[in-house]
Length: 145
Image (cartoon, rainbow, N blue to C red; front, side):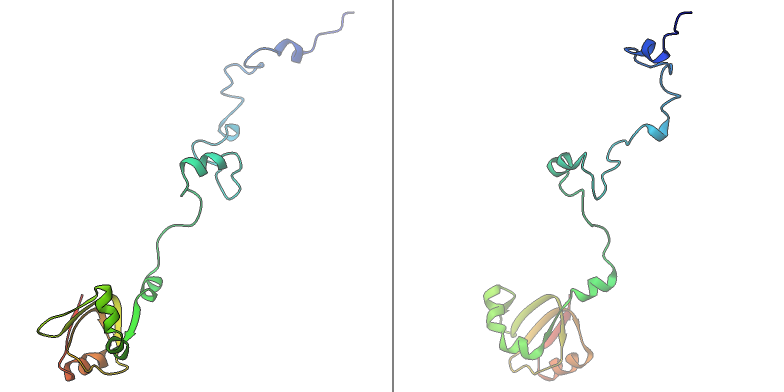
């Protein structure tokens, strides 16, 4: 009796290896990823490509909550405005006019600590309630941006 040749040896060198057009044997489960699939935290197989062509792909991004946005508003007191208006002039945030010193503080909230000796026209994002009364008392004006 002759030993039967194994099926494996007959399929060597054949493209489909006995599975026809190979669609049924290799379904979606074993197909592998498409596009950027598998580029997670440890995406070793695509890491060099990602770093070269998509450098911003990895890392955190998304929406910022309103709480975080509120914390980004800078706070400044009236005493700081009075003491530092020379630096505001140098930076271009303030300029002298006939009406007074025009000061534009975008992204700032003004608080009531201190007093103004000079006349100011202050434009800012927001003001505290006490500041509005103090500024009007000193003869200055306020405007919300």
